Amino acid sequence: SADDTDAAPRAETAVATPAPADAQAANTASDPAEPADIPIYGYSIVNTYPHDQGAFTQGLLWKDGHLYESTGRNGESTVRKVDLETGEVLQRHDVPFEYFGEGLVDWNGQLINLTWRAGKAFVLDQETFEVEGEFTYPGEGWGITSNGAQLIMSDGSDRLRFLDPETFEEVSSLRVTARGQPVGRLNELEWIEGEIWANVWQSNAIVRIDPATGGVTGVIDLTGLSQMAGIGPSRDFVLNGIAWDKDGGRLFVTGKYWPALFEIELAERP
Ligand code: DDQ
Ligand code: CA
Image: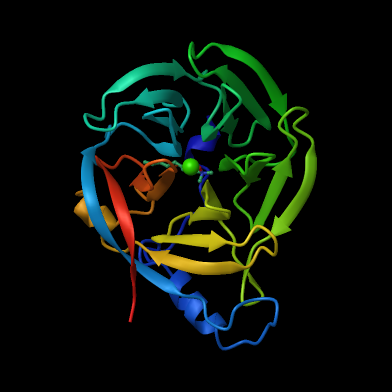
């Protein structure tokens, strides 16, 4: 499929993310709707785990003691249940070749898997991995998560859509901004303690978003983590995938085709 090669050509600056600098610069503007300073966090690695180097990671989540992951690219798109410690794929669903798989969210005993440009999502049973249904949506599908009441999806722009989880109708949407400037390329999502965290595609940044205003309340600069995984500068093998174990308070991140997955903690920057 043409989708495979359809990513816009990018300068080699992709890995040296502009996001923290943008957030820094944006701090000079004055918008009373957003905090005076957007904190930029570093990170420390708590644990390193193996990750399937053949996984073009699109969605990542933690549920009932396991990781669930979706992968992309035509012919490589899957939904998997993964053992954290070994990285072993315990269960796997292959998405038909014509679809480029995208984000993944769990909802009510099911797993919902987006596709990039087909405008279609698949609904799988979390236990059996059988496809039980599907739904359509306008535009592209990138990341997806849930606030417990609605599904929240990204499409590569600065807009997040909130969907009714029963009808899949859009109920509202949110523009994401840092000091009033749009923050685009929002990709993999994770609902964490009342915030939306998002990977910014082809950057080392995760942004923390206030779901009430769309304002970015913090930027996590994960520069250096791909190197820790053994991945050199690349515009394809990018940071992507955030999972939150809310019971254990553990934060997991990985990247596309990375041989490692990390538990990290945020570090305050002076
Ligand atoms: N998206 O998932 C961010 C929406 C699109 C990714 C497009 C990647 C194109 C192919 C990458 C080839 C890697 C060797
Ligand atoms: Ca996620």
